[in-house]
Image (cartoon, rainbow, N blue to C red; front, side, top):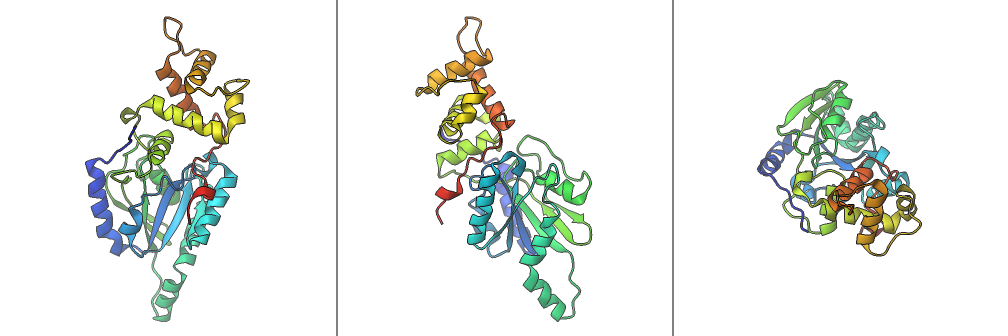
Length: 285
């Protein structure tokens, strides 16, 4: 299955982001800590050009902490600063301004050398749909100023938001890219809720999730569905899960659609614990 999603408002947003770059000092790239690579827009380098960038690994409370730390080390080796945050709870939020000032230290010192009083840092927040941009803005602003929701595509317009005297944010709509070069990227985005479920084949997404668990977190899969072993055939695994969860048709057969929904819901609601689907050790330098 090929997963693509590039609504018209996203193409417009890309043009608007490009136009507003000259107004900002730094880019805040918000990614999902569960899929740091898959949730990073590959068009970003082309769009932001040479602007300084701070990478924010959001929803870190849902990710495997050991792998999040490895991702932060990976970005550091690439010359980028990355922070682990949870915009919902506010964890790590206070570090954002400090990290921004450090990244922009040379620019700030040049302004002071010219006798200029440094103004508030102007930052543009970029991220794919449903990665938590609006929640982060509300947390930084300490008020509900941006619309939030679990449905991708909530934010449609750009807006400037003041955060105290230190920071001014330019919010942008979530932007996906026209084509996923790696099919797995589409599956990971779908599994974590970045793409509308109505556009997906839920059984395919559930199969991908189960195979991932089988390869990397098999003990959690066994425990969740009280399995003594993981069947080699995915259809047999579906049968076992469906029977265990009582996901049956009126004729007593396993309802695969309902079973797929159960698996995806369990993955999204952390019923398997904290998971990271992108592995930094296999990401090429």
